View (cartoon, rainbow, N blue to C red):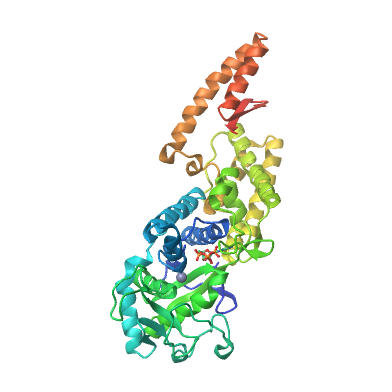
Length: 463
Ligand SMILES: Nc1ncnc2c1ncn2[C@@H]1O[C@H](COP(=O)(O)OP(=O)(O)OP(=O)(O)O)[C@@H](O)[C@H]1O
Ligand SMILES: [Zn+2]
């Protein structure tokens, strides 16, 4: 089986052929750290986390770069408004992004470069672009000459003459209003770096071209980002990198938006739901299921009702795994995932179809439990764990139980303590001391544990 991906540039699903056999290199446009992340930002990181996990599962050696844009107009404006240094704003928000990625089980990227750490690489790129006649300096700015690059706008399939590209503030001396800034001359009081064209700071597009080149070389497999980045950001990255001499990305993959009332969830539009707020109300693994299960090219219209449905659907899967463990003992993930799961993931990362295979297996597993067929139930539960594990959503994985590496150990300790207390409760019941039995149950509830009486004795879970 071959893996196929929708390539925005080709406007169709293409078979994936890596540039280097057995390896895959991915560059994802990461956060502009002007504010804490909303769930749209995290969806983007999560969709590509699932992509990299699938490639790794298929045996590829994955190099995954997700950058941090730590200087931009909005960060500078926020710094001017609040008096907080630009870098302090950047660090705080970068941490908030990483906290949310970690909470949702996104693996750390291989490299996570910050834009401001790559000014020499950007300067070198501009020097070459100017020497080749693709860029020019004016009034301390450096612009890319869009007319010098015949392939410009191929990704978004637009006509340059129809394009209205308003100049930003201070962007004077352009030959064509559609030319875009590679380097922005410093304004008084703004952070700036030295360059051969005077003090200034990099344009957003140039950052990604320079960092992709540094960490992935002149050609790499997949460039990703949200669908909003196709124009101008990715068009401008292509123009810079290819005019410089790089082949750049072989496939372009874009995730769809999380929307609210049909509009892109966005800090600037003020319709965003912070990841940190959602994590107070929903379990991280449920949020991962909610954001990670729809196909990456389908819009997710945010709604609490859909979240509650996701919670219920995920709890059904979890419930089966817990019941199977209770009846049959510890379940280990199966060595291989079912063929229909693999086929779904190979076809443009079809997580919804792959998840349908999980639900089917859960139904079969529940039926096996009902019939007392422990062997089949254990085997089906192992398959469920394997499939969920590939998607980073296995609830029995110790990573989801908090306490870092000691999570499993702590769960064991809590389990022993709860059993001790429950034995006292059972003893109280046996001597018909219902007051004490109820008090014990209430105390456990106050400690955050929910006790369920099952035919096999009491069972506990975190409330
Ligand atoms: N609502 C959303 N749904 C899905 N992906 C999104 C959404 N908003 C941003 N992204 C993606 O998240 C990544 C980081 O985005 P970035 O920090 O540049 O934010 P942004 O697009 O400026 O956000 P905002 O519009 O909220 O200011 C990009 O790949 C972007 O396309
Ligand atoms: Zn980018």
